[in-house]
Image (tube, rainbow, N blue to C red; front, side):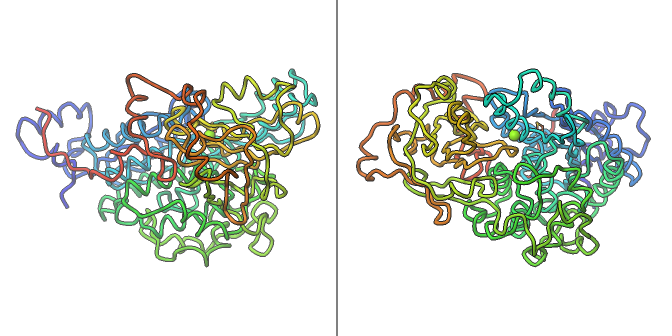
Length: 570
Ligand code: FES
Ligand code: MG
């Protein structure tokens, strides 16, 4: 088989000479004659602290690649630190995916090992790999170990929300709140709750893009390096059988990813990422597939934010394979993985070691989990809610809208003692969609009004066109499509309108006649707050970004361009 990299390296002409000579730098003489060139796309960065250890993981991948006869080539790619980058990491996901895609295509490589961890990094790598369609395999960087504060385990994200609400409610001092900071992040690795990073690592494995059994291995665990080494070897093998994403990522793979997402009680963010990945592959996946396939799947994993435990507990209890074994009958039997074997074939020897952490099918954490897709006059294009993270008594609710035109408006007024709001009100926040913010930030789980917290209120119905951190919880209707800035009905809602949420019937409505809603002009204050970037990525982004129901990718990035580049550089 002729390697793709031979287009650069084979032959005696001047161009081949240039490609080899500049790369040689001590490489053995046969490095360019038939040995697979394996890129290691590394999102390791000091400014993506969850991924900082990936450079060490890359070394193990390199060892495996060399051992199998390949040549490993580390390729630093755009990295996104969820907690650091402004205005929101999601704004840059498509940019990271586009930059990685182009660099994979432009370079003399035959395949790629993708190293990710923090929320947007695995999604952007998978979007890139799908669009280039070279053999590709993911090594998730793994969650951090559980930190404890005053004897109690801390869950990243989830407990920040919880502790900060306690400070606002006056039950925790500001000093103790600050003191918990260094306990929250105990070790290398990504967030240890079932947030987006954990979710996307596990979902990538269910999709078939990770060696089964690897996802969820804690970042400091020696077995991560062992598996990274093995994945390096596998990448070389994948070249010889031409196992590209398009050869095994099918609708059946996404079916399995959705079953896994539901069984682990995973983040709503996975919906938007999976839709974007499917869009690159040309796999016909819709928002409704998540409800149809996932909503009857039991939640088996008892992790924060929906449950009690953390990622190293899940690993100790048997990991994703043990979870999937319990729902094996719901999985697509023919969906293949990077190993060339079906996912279900990897589940034979996968016992549950702790049935508190991974529940059995007969004693699920939540009988019907997954993510519910809502529609109605407030969200004609769809909206999501994660019932497992919501309060059961609010899943059917009618209340008076209290509307905020931007996140700044929200912060300015939410704690105002004179704000006309009670526990039955529905908090509505707009201008937080892909175009409006821009980048669809994780603000949908709005903090509750201080005066209601002091009365003991701990949850309210909230509606927003943004996203929610996978580590958050509450009765939150999010990803409202169309967003307010795309002239959705959300832009026309007014404080005082009645909003009704009916999760069993999958409805989210504003109770005003359709003709009256259509006659209203969008809120001027909301319109004034929408982003209006003049140049750069943000300009490109708001001109081309699609809505959340199709993955919030850019319109011109849908689909694949393959790996072919015919023109030489000189
Ligand atoms: Fe990186 Fe949570 S902030 S995974
Ligand atoms: Mg996040």
